[in-house]
Image (cartoon, rainbow, N blue to C red; front, side):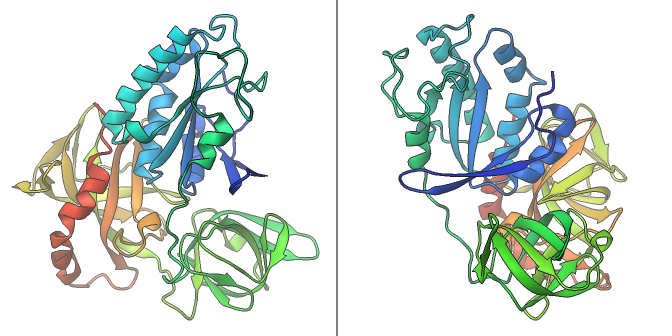
Length: 395
């Protein structure tokens, strides 16, 4: 059954140590696209596993959403995770330690195959409904001696923020607010957003002055990486911007649309073979655009990154390859080495995630004749960036 969160919603709370923003993303597979938009903005994943009889089994099954969400979180570089084993109060579970240990061992072994270091992931038995073990220790769980959910969240490390890079904000939504005007909303990934700058929105040609910046409904002068912001722009019709645009500073390395890009891809869940002409949906930051595979240039060993075959006829599940892709609609992405948050993507087809990848190089719109020099120099850094996407494997 579907729950109630179809789109993503933002909530805020403070622990003794940090101020957290909760990006509540939908669990149902029909809304995976919205879940990807949410996960692409996160620093920490809180994976909620339903412990009740039947619900857990369907979540962890081959087609289950627990698996897909864990894999997507890893692909989108949400490297810190806390697992909450929920509904421990359910009559089929009744705070049973055996059930908790069964779930912990099965979910751990899956997270390991995805690439997570399971020794760093706390598994917290909770009951959200009864509020057990969320903030204070629960009397119903005498056998559990780990942290509460809040304690585990306080144990995470804030990631390093790229404040010195040029500004990039993937737009998550655009609102029209009476008396204020057009307000794009998104998360600052790199750089600093200040009032008064001219914001450029790629892949459109819109450039507009930023009139005000808000973080959680409070006016601020500037916002940095990790902040979820709403900012009003002058004289921009709301229809001219949409989810998937990338805001940047028009006067400092503005973002641009791409005519094509080269990706290092790993197929992880694809039932058939893939050859040139394949056109799946590429989910990158908040954008979801169908991209045609114009040229599969190399098949690689996904462990070492060495080239196994050049110009392969086709690739199949488990293969790693270098692919030239052409978006079917205007699309703004960046190379992984320059802007990691805008250089990672998931590949979706047949209502499921069939691959993951990182962007090696981009060809800007109007720059199609660009030489291959950039990608040559990229190949040295292959092995470093490989390890990032290689370990995002499913069995």
